[in-house]
Length: 574
Image (cartoon, rainbow, N blue to C red):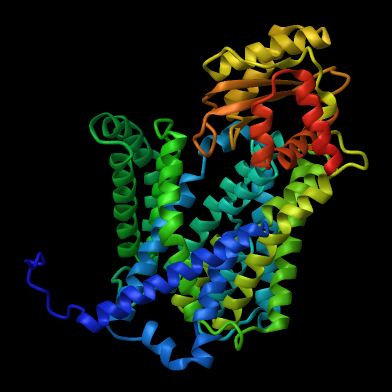
């Protein structure tokens, strides 16, 4: 029985085109996911593998050596090409929704002066250097006269200024620094950086003008600024008031996911109509949604997994289909762009961090963390390529710069923050500060239990410890994922780092990024005068507890002696 009862619209895909489309999507998605997973096994961002999939399947390899297969799977014109282009647009729109969900506006206000200074310097320094380079030596940064020189100059300056919040957050999570004071300043600065950077880029697109839009340049710029302000004020308030109703009257998680995507698509359609780009509207919708306290971390994670498992790999793989990365690779341009990007961002953010009162070592680390460009830089470059602002050589250089800065960020942060004799968390544990079975059901109770244990162990006021740790917890949750939480505080007058550790068999909700309950809770106190101690201990915890097998063994220990033996055996093996 034929279930397709509706008549096919005029111009619908025939059987051959449907076969080609489905086969192309299968090859793209399967290859992108496989190479993305391979990249992650080598501790590299998955976008590296996903881009490589597109490069292999595109004109650089398949198009050159198997042109008939390449032309059949990925035609440059016709119905299949149109549908693939539409899927690519939808994919990048939803990806920017997820990127916006990562933005926490409250972090800017909580970190205040430090985040503002680092964020401002992280834009101003690379913007100034990029603007000067594009003005005085445009050929070295790939100017091809496809757009007015002033527009090109502003784009280069903006492109070298923006960071990649999702990549930065993932890097800090991998190093177990996301919930540290260091991580809070980096994330808050990146939020500030991205918001300002994307608004500048939207204005640049408005300056370009688009024959498909009837709006003047002035109207486009006014619509851009007005919509951004409206979305981040009135729109954010409406979304915040609407979310509880959606959660109460619809099935979870479908109701919230549909509400989020619908909001993003409506916002994206407005900005596309306004003459900017759909991605800017989706990004603002994500920011407004993500800032609501009614959006649980588990819901946020579900939306991210939905998009990142299907749409993101397709989009980044499709980028490789657009450009011949081999023939368009220009070493002098790539080197110049990479050098300007790194110097501007690392020096700018580092100087800003020093002005904000951060120690020299942490200031350099903040600059290195903010230097990760990743997927956001690629999206920015692709949009500029589509609008004719830049040529393919500069686009390839931006992609190379984005990948190199993302890969170098984590290892260099570890190297910069490492001391000559790093402190190991296992050496800070004592029998009195180990709680084998936490009785609390919530994180406030768990912090109170561990504070009491640490107070007895170190002869300190337990209430003072609890108050300091809880004050830090209210700024931002310290659940780091994988069943681990690291509540911590810096204490004035403390002589040495202290640590208490508790195991919860049932798990405690610390609102971790992966939405899983935390079974292993480490409470860390460090001297306020020793800014590096907290980072060292958190980094050591991260390296140790990344091993799933070890986490499971720790969860099963019966007493302090068994725990100590397990940790010392692991330390010796390293």
